[in-house]
Length: 431
Image (cartoon, rainbow, N blue to C red; front, side, top):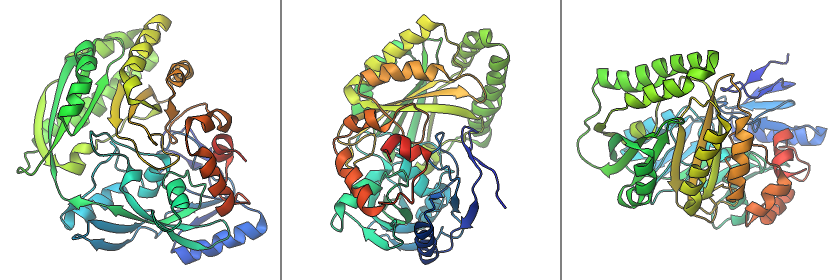
């Protein structure tokens, strides 16, 4: 019996004809072989945290099922091999138990590892890049049902295509990551003016391991976050302080303010100014994965663009003026981050130092303003995050990626019959 699937943000849904829970690679390989012979298509879902329809499967949907095992941990070599459906929280807990940690993370840890990887999850960092840069090996099922293992030396073209592959180069069944000894982060969070923040961002980024900030539209205020590596003893926020900041203010109160803004948009600038006034300074030390990530209980829609690093602040300044000129009412802060260049051919950060601008709209409110912002970001040679909302298609995406044609030739080789296609891949990668 068909069942309805919906992503976390309620921006994409599917009614698959068949739903198959993964057991092991051999079972999935047989499933792919049967689907190819019958002219059917397969898509794999993770936690549903993409905002686009990248995971939509209206034919055969594969769920993580039992494909969540830890296959090998080599602490001395700094390597872990895990199956694709493991979620990031579990992965971090396993690493921690072996005295290890991920080099970098995004700010959400409910995703599956494969889902985060395939859509280009990135985090921020002066010297540490995206998830794709941590991957040293992949196990994949190709369009004919064969199981292959690839890395920088064994079929490097497929390795470079499939690390951020949108699920279009095969079913990822296992991932080998380069990891490092467990470390902590000294977190310093503080409010600052927009002008101070944008003027200081380059200097802060050079001086600290991880820097990001949130600008509150309709205000001159930002919340800045500096995270620096340390091996000092953990000094986490107290239980009450953590509840107050992460749960009550960032989720309960913020959610209530967003709901009020949805009912009465004219109040949004006042609400944002009120939110900016209660920003406070915090200093604490905690395990890296607990500092990198934050709970996200307020539902939203998101568009994020990767820009040349030198264009990050000029583009943000342009967008700020556009918001004022258009008199939009935007309740969510704009998130600003940067990472080094990476080498995965379809990564939005491929072959250039990259800055990211992320824009959010509260659940079930108008997000049409994303399109006008996107027009500005395209002027700066922006590339959309694959898992977040955008309007781009393959014809205008291809020129933005230096190795696009090489990646498409790999796709033709490993999935000539498009067993792994859906409407989203057809739109962004072509038929």
